Image (cartoon, rainbow, N blue to C red; front, side, top):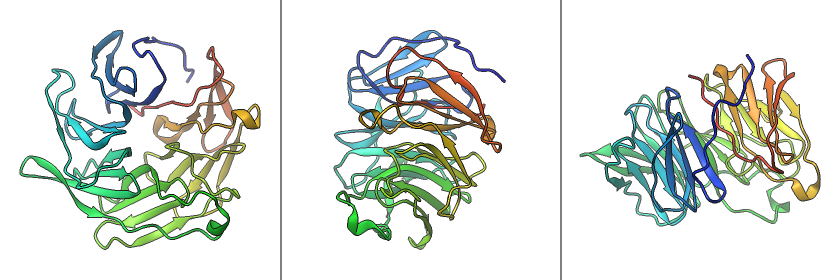
Amino acid sequence: MEYRLKWSHEGHRGPINCAAFMDDGSHIASGSKSVGISYWYTLTQTGDNGHVIICLTWDPRHMYRLFVGCSDGAPAICENSETQESTSSILTGTKAPVFTLTVDEYSGYVAIALGSEIHVAKEVAYKYATFKIFPPPSELPLMAEQPDKRIRGRALAFRERGTELVVAYLNHGMVCWDIGSLEQRWQINPIHSHQITASGHTTLSSDKKHIALTNLGDGVDIYSLGWSHPDMRLKHPPLSEQKNIPVQVSWLRDGAAVVSGSSDGDVHIWEIPSGEPIQLLEHEGTLTYLVCGSCF
């Protein structure tokens, strides 16, 4: 399968912070500081607002419902992005930047990386509110050598019908939490000396068995859940140390391929499980740090 440019949009006046496909691939939502949220369908921009958007995700159980995380606090819910219905907030009791969030298709739970905390919220009486807050993750073996010890959740994924939550942290590797007991099932310690899981650039495969992450070094690593040594390393080093900027990675075709941005502006696609590069999508520019894929 070869990927070709289908259409492009120019609605944002500044850098785009996040983007996500609706499950059926019919819409893309994108978020930035300059425009807020934009909803795209084929060649039409269907809406926007004026907030500084860090992250967003579609609700797999409700068409056109979008969960949004802002830099200035509480996560919001756009109930119907198509008709521009008013938004509501998730009650968390915490005022902090929302770095990432996700929704479980079975339980309807919403996981939120909120400042230094990881919350799980559920719907009660037509409102969403936090009902679980996870404890701090265990420190990694080389943690004492790291100048940055902040607890920051950067990617979230539910497993086992909403009973487990996998969290990729900025400085604490990847942890699988039991939502019922709030205990750690396992923790992945990345093999790189910096032990950093890049900012928002980790993603779980559609079968929930593998994790892809950009390693702030030489490309993308593929891990099996619970194992601290990668099954596969997809090499694409940055152009220079000055351009060693975290870029996003995403799965394609139900885990048959991985796509990643790069510091040279191109988008790279590798075949899985062979790890062979299969396509290079060229872009004009010096950096492509945000990509999103869809398995529709």
